[in-house]
Length: 221
Image (tube, rainbow, N blue to C red):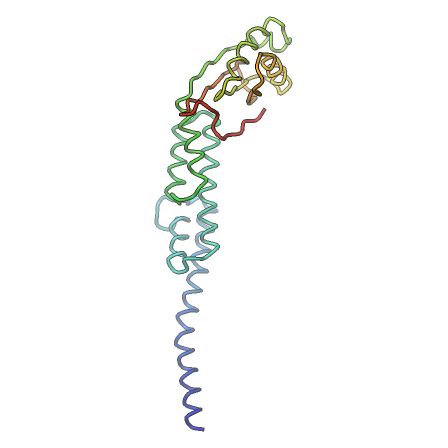
């Protein structure tokens, strides 16, 4: 009877000794996650390192390597920087785009979504470009005088590795320009993006790749 009571006391004592540190660690993880979310909301992503969302998420993983919230937090940071890189690339601000890609790598260099965007950026930086300014009045009037010019641009845009950026005043004008370019000979569908901006122009970009083919990228029409 006495021995049983002693064993029970020992078990209770050990449980109390073990539960204390566990509860403290769990509370620390909760606190770190809360601070990381606040840092992200405040756009304190990486710099300064102390108190940044990235640092706090890694602090959580040091305590709990499989913590799903911290892992997802780092993924969200990478997604944020890659989205910023894509937007900068869209504006042809390639230096800014590269900075965003570098930040994504800093957060998690193993993230598989980084390299495709980095490759696309390198290709665009080295692309062969031909920009032709159009008379905005002829575009607005859908003038047939532009047809041979647009067909010639369409011929180049149909080549593997090439795409077009159409700058016009409206989506309707963009569709008309695209239709004229599509009358160029060839079967390959022209990849094109319409931008509402001036001056009216068509820019054809041809990406230089090792196998002279299009990279895995999607362009909007």
